[in-house]
Length: 301
Image (cartoon, rainbow, N blue to C red; front, side):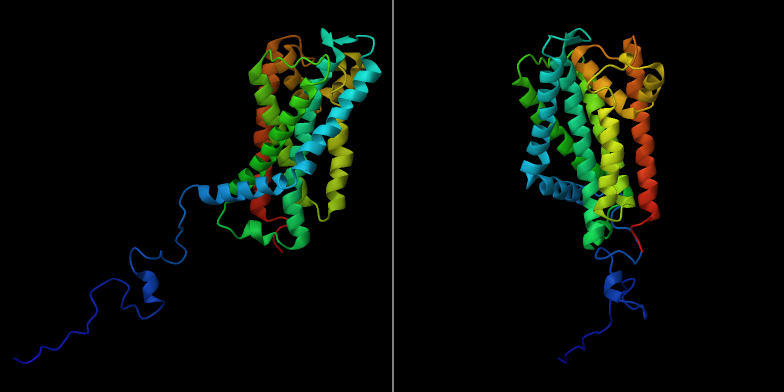
């Protein structure tokens, strides 16, 4: 019986006999067509990877990024308590150390959130590794969320370290009257400064530019926001200036969470309005950062 010739014809599979392009890339179930997106929703793997990279970066040098800022801020409590609290001075019905401690905690959180988010992009631009942020398949929102999330994580760790240290200081009472206010103002304040830091790192071209923002904007707004005093002691003009400072609402609202009192207003409704306003401000600033990232301003040559 004669052998039957074997057929050399290819099966009728779409894409196999296309004369142009690479037929293998057109096989169904193997590779998508050119230009077709592979990730249709949030890239959770990429987002988590960048977030963990940023967290590990500052955690490797935690002595500088967590413990040193906590000790530095703690020195403010020691100095001002010794200087102003000797005569059992009371503010808002509590001793001075208890009054100033919440403000110092959230001030440390905000400053470190700014420091963390303002470093990554700027270091990448200076070292020429910014492509490591721009090339991965991450949208502008995912990139922003990972950087800001890592900055807020550092802020929370610094806040916890400060809280533990201040609990050891004689006379400090950190029992919470309104835990929701502690969480809301602490997180919103950290997000606000993380977004500012991110925007600063996009704008800055060298570390001197970033240091200028820290020294001439962030530090003054932090220290002149009612951390060590109530604004009722100021002249009316300076009270108006203080109320235009968003740092004032973060610090006073955070303090309200511990003491149940604040100099934002005479009623709890004033604190609630401040909380909502701070959330709107964070959302607006996030929108600005998102649009700047999408435009590629100072990031893409």
